[in-house]
Image (cartoon, rainbow, N blue to C red):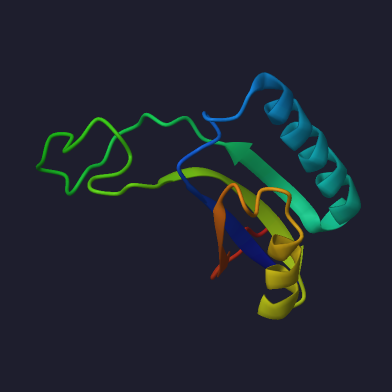
Length: 112
């Protein structure tokens, strides 16, 4: 099995009502349950952060995005046999529609 990073990109869920958010979180929990052992980790990211260019520079911006209209809102680390299966897993995510999902293979997975 290979590891893949699913990167959630979009403008966030700030426009959702509390009930809509609760619904999305319920769908997320069910989806993770269906993935079982293929789900390795995942986190929602805050919208603030910093962008650095090199060691000599100060912080370039007080957000993680310089000139982007979308944010990286979170990520999931999954296992799949290949890119096609990872794409299918991403396509089954309840986040699709709220976010675009970039699917990237991990080049050098952690060694246990």
